[in-house]
Length: 126
Image 1 (cartoon, rainbow, N blue to C red):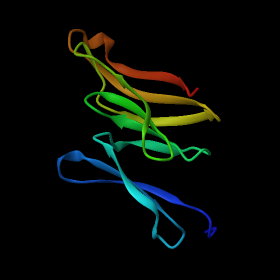
Image 2: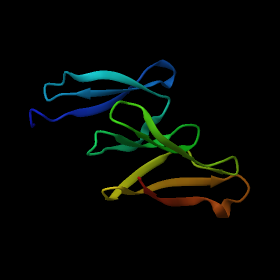
Image 3: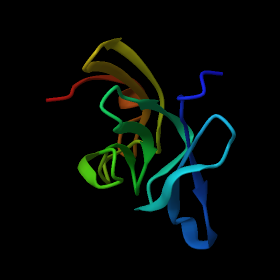
Image 4: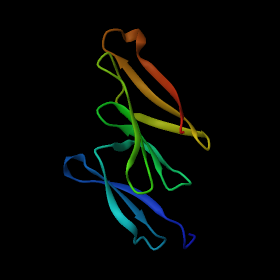
């Protein structure tokens, strides 16, 4: 491992509060842990971006994406789903280019089983 490299991980406390940790090559804190709220990425995935920010795919109440800057502050959060078309989580995301991603989620329509299925969303960061 490159001595200058950093590893980022998210831990969850009681009640679902998430904390972002940044560790150095020796697995020591490279910066102070940052509380990032209740975003749940345990059934999703995330990407560490070149500018030090992270892009998380997972859930809040419904499927959601959260972009968090290098200091741990939220840049943007977007939820997908409503009472009619629920999506529990964005379980997969593929990076297509430096700022484009394909997010994949399953949706369930409470009124019509014919509307259940996979949904793909193309995400562009600006």
